[in-house]
Image 1: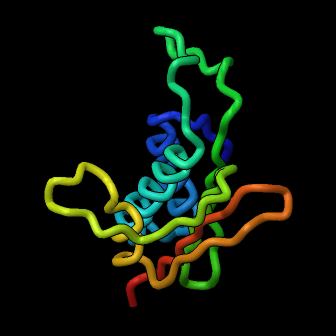
Image 2: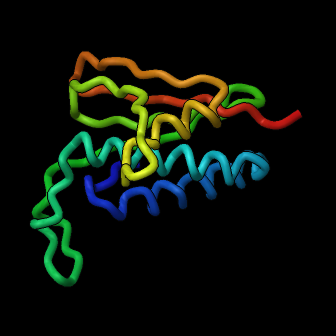
Image 3: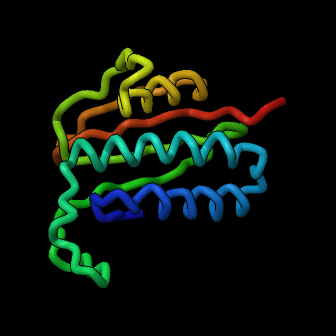
Length: 136
C-alpha cells in the first residue's frame, strides 16, 4: 500500500493490517501487528520528512510527492510486516529517557517482534521489516 508521508499514514496502515489478518484468519496477531505497523510507518514518515505544508485545510494531498509503502506477507504461522521509505539512514535502537517524547518506536518493535531488520534496495531507499509469530 502506498501512503502519503503524513502523520495520518499509520491509521491507513492499521486498516490494511486488520483487513489482511482477517482474510488470513490470523486475528490473534492484530493488536501486536497494529502496534508494530504503526511504529514502522511512523518512523518511515519521519525518515522521509513528510511535509504537511502541502495539505490544504480540506486535506488535499495532491501536492505531496513523498510516500512510504507498507505491506504484509505470510510465512506459515508468521506474518512479516515491511515498510519502505526513501531514506538511506539505517534504523537504530535508541535509548529514550523518561522525558523524551519520541525514540521508543524501534524498542517497541524489538520487544514485540520475533525478529526485525532492514535491507537496502537497489532502486533506492530501504525496507524495515518485522516478523511476528502467531501464539501457539
